[in-house]
Length: 186
Length: 347
Image (cartoon, rainbow over all chains, first blue to last red; front, side, top):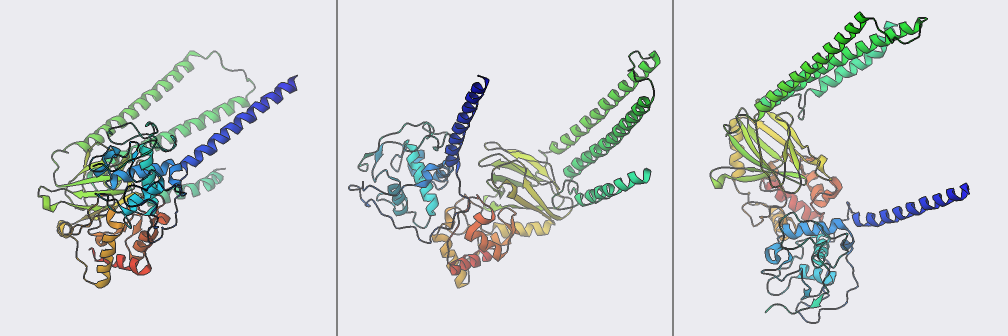
């Protein structure tokens, strides 16, 4: 009898340990950070998956953005969004001179590669091209952050606080909006 | 018996002597004061050191006596504890405890009064000190240094290097852009925290010329340990000529490679973060590079400012200071050399 109880207890302990280990390995992925990345290629890669004009933009993209899985990268994207003055036109995601990024409307596609090519190529009526101006790794961080604004990312990697007063809740608290194609504002 | 003790003790004493003599001098030492506040702090430190050493020795002696006494007693036949003490012994012990308590209170009170006066001496007269005004902003992981002036055209920005005239009080306004940092140049002053959204003010003064190293003293992230700066105290003439050269816009490149370097700088990723006055580069994310060649160190006092170090830094600073904000750059060797040539013209 006593032995049975002991065995039951042991089973409990092993189970709890297994659950803790599983949880820990999940959170490790979230916190993963690469310190010594190899230098990027001299030229930004030439992906142009959506056309420069609105319209047939929703070519399904095979490429995923690894930065979207790591809290550090998304937070770096948030920092760069301010420091590279994306906010100058997109106003912390709410839009102003440029279109809003926190809503469900996507003019040039909502996939990570679409955002990547928007930053690299620029878009008509104002979005400048940042080719050779922003390193690839940072473009992917920015693309991840842009998607977090409308809740497209996992909750645990989205930034959960803002350093300044923001017109909206934190990216983590914003609900997921289903992306819809949209034409540019007239 | 005695010789055995002294044999044991002598290497310890020698090591202690060596430690104290080496620790008392240096470019980053609170025990080698170069200014009035640092003098006050080091005096307080020595007072506490000597008093605490005396207390430690006294306690050790008393402890030794007590052990010795109990040994003598346990050697005797009567092992029963003393439950009823004779009244005169009781009084004697009470007096000893009372005297020791009084001595402790007085000692701590002396420390309290001393540290109060040292603290007051450091912040007093702040409003009256208006010699040179420098605004220092802590970033992850470097120091932005801005020399303020009533004449707006004489305001300039540099990084990780503060020049001050000897014998003149320097007022510092401390800010932080991201997380809490703490400004600490031990030879000149104690620590002052720089907190985002707040402005802290302090002043210091160097009484003798020299180079003093400072260090962030509040853990601020991955490269906190490599967030240094240097303070160069020099004569008034040297300081004035430094100010004059720093207020000039950057020198335009004269050689072909330097001009090519400038072109790479302006068309590539560099000018997204760095500013060079007199050119179109005007971003304030990274250190201002207008007079980078005149500085002694790069990477927040991480390395000396040599061509080799600079090219290593530009090519892949992540190897030198992992996690810092500067991304690696894949420039061809010729392009990298051109950028270095351009940097070295920026005197």
